[in-house]
Image 1: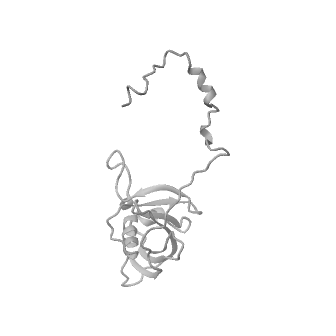
Image 2: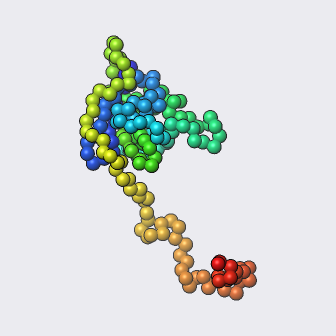
Image 3: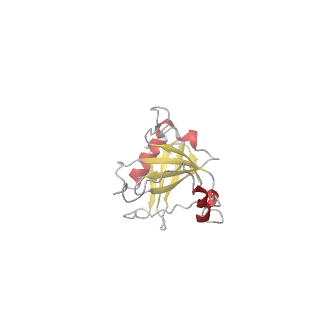
Length: 179
């Protein structure tokens, strides 16, 4: 079977590529097809991320094993496309170049019979020109009602008086020790 993907650059303009690739190919093969379809040179590190239906990022699948114990972490080459994506699980996020953070939303659009004589992977359709630079990402954390979040300890300057007279703290001074 052939998986047909729409790969959309996360940017204000509509920039996407439609890619056909065999279901038994790996995520690494899809990585190669994506960076070729968008004109990257392939020299940067990349990762796929599983996600839910609303594109909330979940587990990372890196290009290279970056774990503490070699061989313990599975990489793109260890995952056939059919083991991650199917008719129920159609979305995955792709990030290329962790400095520039080129981010792509990858969605499985169709699963079809392989064409006789077809060569895969193949870029089926290309729309939009790649910008010179990736869109700047903003990372926001969920905050509570106050600026301290869950780490508020309810202590203020007046509460530091509790340390006065405690001989377990040695005063190293400032001037003579921090020159």
